[in-house]
Length: 374
Image (cartoon, rainbow, N blue to C red; front, side, top):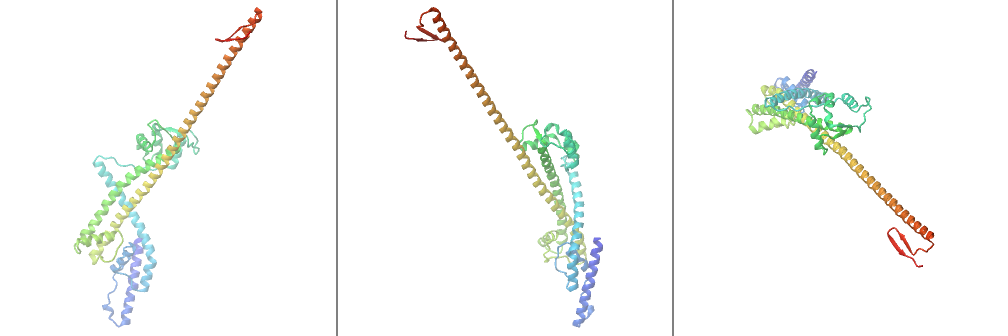
């Protein structure tokens, strides 16, 4: 479809422009055979500079119909090229990933994981872990961290390769506690998002470096090829300006061989550059997800810790109040016992005095003697 669109627009542009140039030559009385007409290669070149958004400007339509034709078809041309460039960038990214993984394995290094979360599997695993029905998950249910390995295996998508020590390290990084720490389901979801973002950042960084190497190769190829006609600085300048689709127009390819190389070089070079930019955008997005998940996890764990501290303070206050009430009760009991003993002692003295018929000169009261006047 893209080839048909490019061919149709190029041939239509060639016909419109040449008709205009011939008509102008006839009106001015010039020889039509001496007029420089637009060749098929030049027409394709103009359409290619429009489609890639480079637009050097050394060749452009001069007739009203040619300008109108380019203005109408510029949007579908750029859109189709964007789709083609996206497919090419994905293909180049796959090649870059394969080459990166081969390189990593050759040096005995560990290939980063690319984790994905299946929502249905996550809900089923959480429902099974919290012993609830599917869809009825208790977010406050607490799970031991060292019991999460079977849970991770149920998720699939690379999670079976994630070790529990990885979870503990992220929990410690989030100011959590030790290996036996229990984690709530709501916190577990944020922890999974954090681990996924961390692994995806590491995975995409390796892809970014590989895409950068491919991009450098195409820059270098353009630099080597065009340095035969220009200076090294101008050749490097042209390579960067072209593959970044800036295209000032002060330097541009000339001749059949240069333009044919330009087609091949721009397609793969722009694809590599787009792949590198796409990977960089993915890394940036993953870093934002990482920061958001880390902040939410720290906030959730901090909130739980503050609630625990408040609960401990309340329990301590209740214990203090209970102990105080118990002490007061014991004091009241002791005071009542002493008072009862005093009353019993006074009663016995009065009974003894009444039985003897003599007034009590002394009144003994619980180890205390008091003299009474007769």
